[in-house]
Length: 352
Image (cartoon, rainbow, N blue to C red; front, side):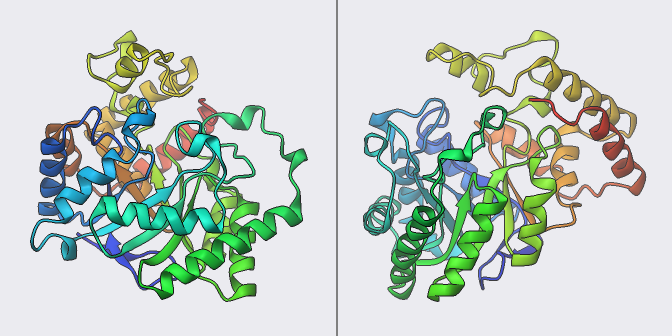
C-alpha cells in the first residue's frame, strides 16, 4: 500500500487509516485485535483512537476502553513497531472531566494517561479532539455563533497547549500534533502561534469528509495546502449512509442507527440520516451501479483523488465489513466517473 507523510512532519503512514472507536462497545476486544491484524495484512499500519472512545454512545464508565484494547494489542511482542498510533484529548464533554476544557496542564496529564492505556512509550500523532472555544462540526453549522469568542484568550490558550505539546515532543512522548473538528481560522492560528513560540506545527486535521459532507473543500482545503496539513477524514461513508444499509427505510440490527436508538438516541446518525441525505445516497448508488463499482469502494477511492492531502479513516464493526472495504483499496476512478461525481455534488451539495 502507498505510504504518505503527515503534513510537514517526518511521520510516514499508510494511505488508509483504521479507526478504533467501536472497540469496546460494538466491537469486542478479540474482534478488534482481529481487525488490526486484517488491516495490517492489507498494508494499513495507521491506527486512530481517542481517550473518550468507544462511542455510540459515549459513557463515563467506558471512557478510555478503546485505548486499553489497542494497548493490549500493542503490548504483544513485536507489535508496536508495525504501526503508527494516533489518539486525541477530549474537548469539552460532560462524559470526560465533567465537561472541563483542556489547557496545557491538562494536556500533560492526558498524554501520560493515554500512554499508560496504550502501553507504549510514545504516541505518533496526538490530536485535540474539539476546540475549547466551540465548533461547527456535527451539524452545529446550522446555528453556529462565534460572536462570544475572545481572540486574545484563544491565542493565549493555543500558546499554553502548544507549549505543553512541545515539552511532550522533546521528552519523546509524542512525535507530531494534530487537530480535529477545527475551522479554517482555527487551523491558521494554531500554525501561526506554533511558529511564534517555536512549537510543533499541526501535521494533520481530523474533520468529517465524505461524498455527502464536503464543507472542507474550500477554506479549510486552502489553508491545509498552504500550511502543509493532511486531512484525516472521518466518516468517509457518512456513518454508514453510503454503504446503503439504510436504503428503503431499513435499520439493520446492530447498525449504528439501531444501537444509538436503543440507547436512548434518535437513531438519525447524529443528524446525518435525513431525506436529503438518503436521496443523495441513492444517486451515488445508482452512479456506482452504472459504472460497475461497489458504492463503498467508490466513496473511499474518490477521497484519494482530491487536490489536497487526505487519509481516509475507515471503521468497521466486524472483520467481515473491514474485509469488504479492503477489497476496494486498489480501485482507481476514471476521469469520466469523477466528472459524474462532481455533477451529482452540485445537485446534492447540502445533504445534512
